[in-house]
Image (cartoon, rainbow, N blue to C red; front, top):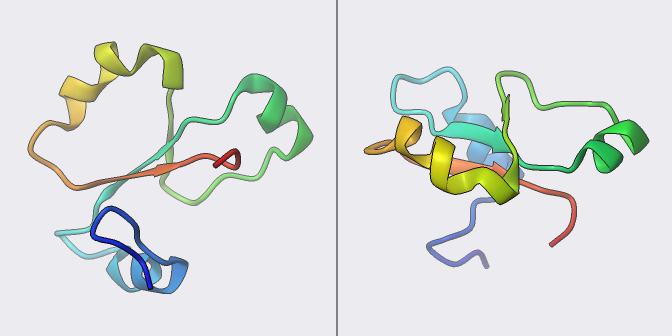
Length: 70
């Protein structure tokens, strides 16, 4: 069962397209994207090492961060 900081793919799928849908941020490295270039529709690609710069853009919103390296 997911914690309050996790969301399942089926839970996320039910939120997509709603006004309250979370922003989806893909923080995979360029190397990882080269290995698998597929993106979730609507996901914004951002550098995980530069989160301090882009995080303020999403202040006040729910955010789902996607990375294949957990």
